[in-house]
Length: 430
Ligand SMILES: NC(=O)c1ccc[n+]([C@@H]2O[C@H](COP(=O)([O-])OP(=O)(O)OC[C@H]3O[C@@H](n4cnc5c(N)ncnc54)[C@H](O)[C@@H]3O)[C@@H](O)[C@H]2O)c1
Picture (cartoon, rainbow, N blue to C red):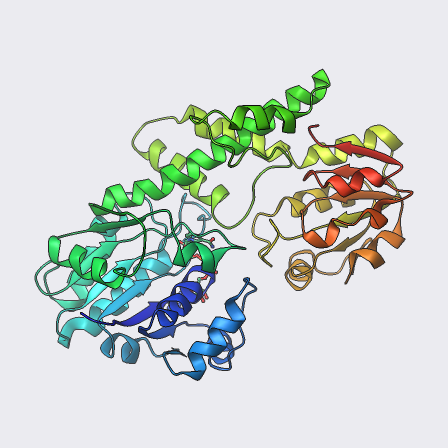
């Protein structure tokens, strides 16, 4: 296979970035979504999400006709050789993972490939170990009345990109994991990735699924670990960032993911670790380390509010500025963002809030609705005029400006050095 004809099902952070990047590499790509508004936006070169560099690449590849979007799954699958399933896999209301979107797409693709020559189905969504073999493959076989491995191929190919750096991460990954059900499937996907300059790790589907969960669980544990060290350091009068520097010089540890603060959020870390805990419990194993990492993370954002209360006793009618809403800089994603817990907690205690974020205000407004004690400001310069007390929740570059903090009382959750220009400055765990 030279350049591939690829369909991408689901055009969220992973699907759209995957589609745009494969198009950029010269492949022909059709991105499918049930959300017609998204499809319309993509075809007009307007990214439905914010991600650095996405708009330029999207515009280029729509213009040169290597990429298009559609809401017609059948036409997309029939006109391509490979389909990547990139739909969401959120936490379930009752279950630890909601696989309904993956199941729906597997069923629909199965029906469509009934009368088609060999087709490769790639599961890129994060799914708990066993899902590809016990759910995706049987659904494809049932609805196509064909045999996996003979009439069509299936691969589990987890995605490791980070929001905020998604395009760079997709194009230059540390490794690509290919968990094929057979050699033909594995080789075909290997060919799609042939221009990538990184190790390609070939394994079976359930191991590929577990590699994704092990990666996120490890990173989550590392974050909670350094936050715990930070909490202890603060009580002992030690700067945890100095400690992390010395610790990270140990090659067995590495300096990555040692930034103490208010903990992790986002669409993946919390839900993926909860899903693995759920899967482990299903096989009668109680994960001690993972549960502890989650528990520590639950309380970490609220330490900011506790520190503020120690300074002013009651938060009733106190005007508080919240700098940052997105779960991290470089994205508009608000899923499980620490800002949500912090703002709810401040509101419950009677505070009056002005919040700002360079990209996430629209999403935040949907989450909080209208509240008489919460308003949003378009810029940090404007937001800080609202009050004396400032909480730094997301470390956007826009907040790295000493002028914002002069004459203020700052509780810093993200180690923004410029905030030390404040009248009073305190870090959450330093
Ligand atoms: N966001 C990340 O940083 C990231 C990183 C690695 C892996 N993942 C995993 O990738 C998967 C997708 O994550 P995301 O953040 O891109 O999700 P998302 O919620 O941003 O996007 C999912 C998209 O799928 C669409 N969709 C749902 N059902 C569909 C159907 N039947 N047909 C076509 N489209 C459909 C939705 O409309 C939505 O646009 C998840 O399993 C996630 O855990 C995410």
